[in-house]
Length: 163
Image (cartoon, rainbow, N blue to C red; front, side, top):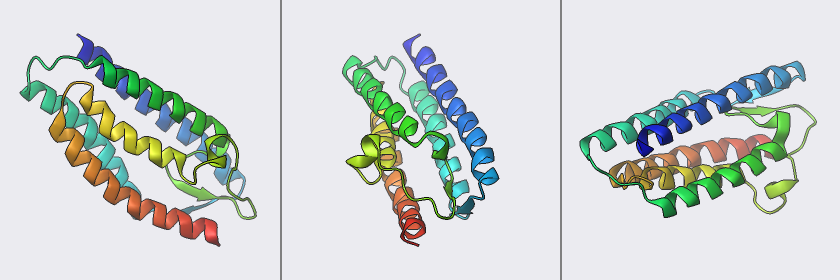
């Protein structure tokens, strides 16, 4: 029962993020934003989709995986950090890389402290979410895949903001 509630929450949360990103994308484009990194974006979408599928499959293959409340609390703390990071960006937040010419990076909230707090948060999420149900294979495999993906993404984003 815990797993079903958790995975439903996770899917709803991810879909709501895509809805917010879509709304923000329309606003960004109306402000003259230019998109970058289109070639790697489908791989990010595929990885995050397969991450959720992998959680479900590993859980099914590993029956009776109890919930780990410590990792659940850690996930909720990471989620709170995520909301702080995303709300600090406001309409500028997106799952894609956009830049409005003449606009510079946001420097408020966690962005005062860290260069890429949202990516730091995503790394923590990918590692912690599967551990809520002791799904070690998903945690390891997708932490590695996410690190590879983010190395590409951060390189592109750093180049965009260096212009």
